[in-house]
Image (tube, rainbow, N blue to C red):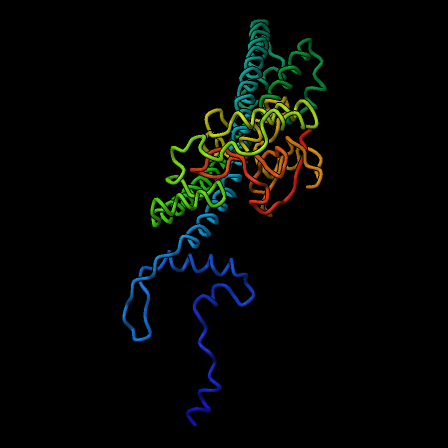
Length: 372
């Protein structure tokens, strides 16, 4: 009887199965295992005694670090977009404030002229009612009653009309400035949120890398030429393999036009410079900051983020790539590099990995664009 009951008992599910599901890929399962191993301080055995969790393997650390860098890069592109929007709003606000000040100056001049007319009329024994209304504490009453102005037949009607236009203009500009200021505050709030996300992701990656020995980090860095984290690559500068690939002159010569050739030459000149999220040069770059600066040297202005740069020109099929083309990666278009030929690109990978040459097969290819 006992055996019969046991045969119908539901098999006990492994803890990772609840996280991953039966249809997940082996890589996803391995990444989930890394999370479980890295986040657990103890493990409970069947007999109820506590055991220390095993240390994650270097492969598990690499998978999770790569995932964290990717998540940080997604947040970096959102940060770049919010920063661009905040900077634009700040410039617009400054312009509107200057415009409001100029128009207010003209309004005050017109008001002074009307005041002089009113004083003259008062001394003469009377004041035109339209002037009286405009000089009151609430001149909007006059603007709301446009019919009064239409009936005004006095010689100062033109001056009154000019004052009314200026008053309306000043109010309009001030309202636009207020709306812009509110938009800027909202954008800067998003900016701070993205900054916190980036820092947390990178800190988590660094904590995982701290579990490895120096030798393990060096091996990880050499596995694909761009991984290993800040401590692994720190101080390598233009180290072994960094300049491997097509010579700069040959790549530039194969570019489809002179602008692309200059962009390629700029990218080569940036090799070895550090990755810093949000940076646009000249001493450090993030991925889209590098491509933006490279094409700017060729006389082409690109937008700031990966997901806007992909729309900066016609899409190019992978089989038709030419030096200077922008190559994008991941489904969210969160990474970009500058193609140099022979299946390679120059890109700014992630913190700790300087600007370098890498194969475009290193990451999931999402598309390519030729800036115009």
